Amino acid sequence: MNEIFIYTVVSLVALGAVAAVILYFVSQKFKVYEDPRIDTTEAMLPGANCGGCGYPGCRGFATALVENEDISSLFCPVGGAETMKAVAEHLGKAAAEREPQVAVLKCNGSCANRPKTSQYDGATSCAVISSLYGGETGCTWGCLGGGDCVNVCTFDAIKIDPATGLPEVDEEKCTACGACVKACPKMVLELRKKGVKSRRIYVECSSKDKGAIARKACTAACIGCGKCVKACAFEAITLENNLAYIDAQKCRLCRKCASECPTGAIKELGFPPKKVATEKPEPNKEAKPAEKEAAN
Image (tube, rainbow, N blue to C red; front, top):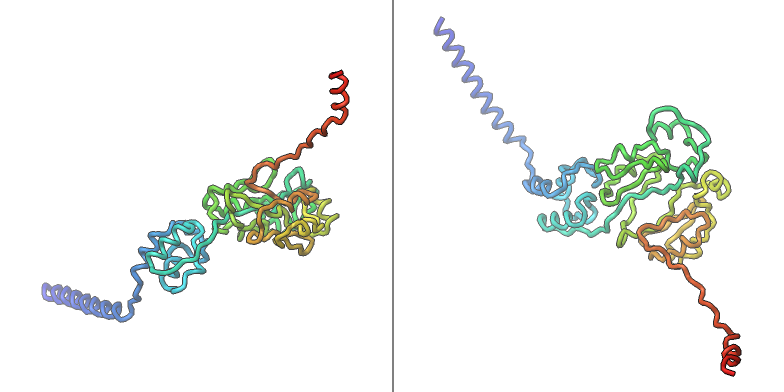
């Protein structure tokens, strides 16, 4: 009985040893080499795993940075230029510099500007609302106010303003990851150049309806009149499908377009208030004769 027990134990030990040897050789044969720089590069990234870089998390982005010789098209919006510069120096590669961006809302259809024409009673989701109908107002292009952009923002940079019913972006918290842009079914959110001193000019409207229809649905809508296009000396504004668009790369922030817009659809952010021209009083032409009489 004892001999059987000993033989069994010895057999199991021998079998385990043989299996261990086989597994060792198999692992050595089929092991996948991973560049150790991937770990160090990942450690240099913010660790937000937001997907704003276009890769599945910081690990995927770090792998792409290590494996690609040219990383000029790769960028981490959360870490920004400083992080990319540090990573490029670590890997001995050149990274392209990009200007900081921020998410902006291309809709000014507040409760005051865009009256409701119906009442929605269902799931509070822009994706659900847009799949059912155009929304509670006459404008089918504007923000639905369901808060999908708020839900996907992992940086708490967007909140719905109860007074206007529209999302507001906190530019200090916004990392330009683009999650809100992808989540919006109406595509009224856009990543734009943050600008020097946070000064930005853009068309705060997404309606492609003709002027009269757009103005009836929202008093702050772009009516496609083209006055802003004519006022721009830098060819930074284009008009397509009854909607004006300002190219942030060409815009010189002169603000002439905003002054020409009849509906106030062009948003100006970060600028000091415009100086109001005061008329100089005309010199009193009758003062001289009066002075002569006083002298006499």
